[in-house]
Structures are given as structure tokens and as C-alpha cells.
Length: 109
Image (cartoon, rainbow, N blue to C red):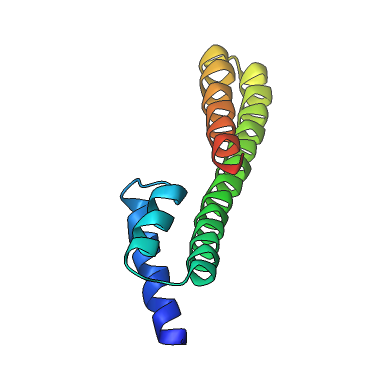
């Protein structure tokens, strides 16, 4: 039973990667003669696993954006004392940090 479960799980993951939706995958597997309970369980697990990976990537991006914003803050403070390129650091790095954090939030939610 576990080999069939693992085989179905990898097959469902490949179908999800190809862009098919939950209903399409369930009807496809039911049409092949698999049990309804097993199909719903395997599809649910594959979708949860996919969302867990996206959530991890999103949290890493949010953390990276926060670190970039903090570095931008530190560089802005030091460049304001040394009369350096204040606007480039202030607007450029902060914009990159905020954009990175928002991309991460889009992946999390």
C-alpha cells in the first residue's frame, strides 16, 4: 500500500507542477480506477507539501528583505555623515529590500 501511495504522491506532484488543479487531478485518478479516499488523501498531502515549500521560500525572502532594509538604514546613516551618495542608498536599497519582502509575503500568503 505504501508503494502505491508513494507512486501516486509523486504522480500527483508532477501533475500539480504541470499546472493542473485539484479537481482535474482527482477526476483523472478516479477515472483510472483508484479509490476515492486514497485519491483525496494523496492529493491533499501533495498540495500541503507544495504550500509548505512555497511558505519556506517566502519566509526566506521576507527575512532577506528585512536584512536588506536594515543594511540600507545603516548605510544611509553612515553616508549622511560622510556626504556620500545618500539618495542612492536611501531610495535604491530600501526599495530593493521592500520589494523583496513583498515578494516573500506574496509567496507566504
